[in-house]
Image 1: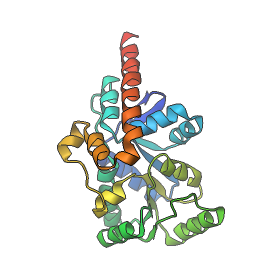
Image 2: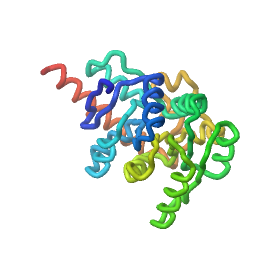
Image 3: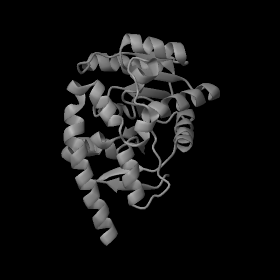
Image 4: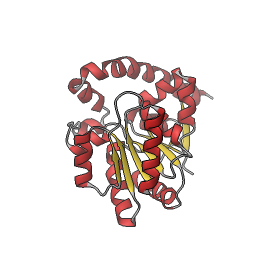
Length: 243
């Protein structure tokens, strides 16, 4: 479908916004149950450390390069045209294409206030802010039935990784829709959180901006995982070039 490389064992697909949007809409119009992961360094390291989560990432129908370190690694591994496909930018593009084509969309995750703002901005047939704890089996069945009844063919999932990826993997085949894990996109699009300036995003400094704004939640992810990824990815690239 798309050219790809395995980065530390995780398949990352080299696509772009237009191509990813077209593929998602094609699946959605056909009523196919699929899921899309917007991958960052966090996803790759988590998959490396957890065999169960590695299976979740492997099962995804599309894995975009959400983070610039993955884009740079794809390019170093021979896919020169690789570009970033960032969840908070992909979501409004897919939303607009879905509305234009009459494809029903649902949102799952976030808080009631954030979802209310998304519903004000976009056409949404179903919205749910689940509890921050794991839902019970009864709650999960109720959510699944409600999504089926809504007729949604695209479901944006904003639970954060790896939680959202595990949720999508568990619901593949149960919900006839394309599920897309978009992380903090709900908060950014609703204005609940401030995004890093575009120049910081383009130079892989978004992590620094987010660390400064949410240090208690993100310091372990960025200060431990980013240096580890850099070392491991550099080793992979060097070995690939020596072969």
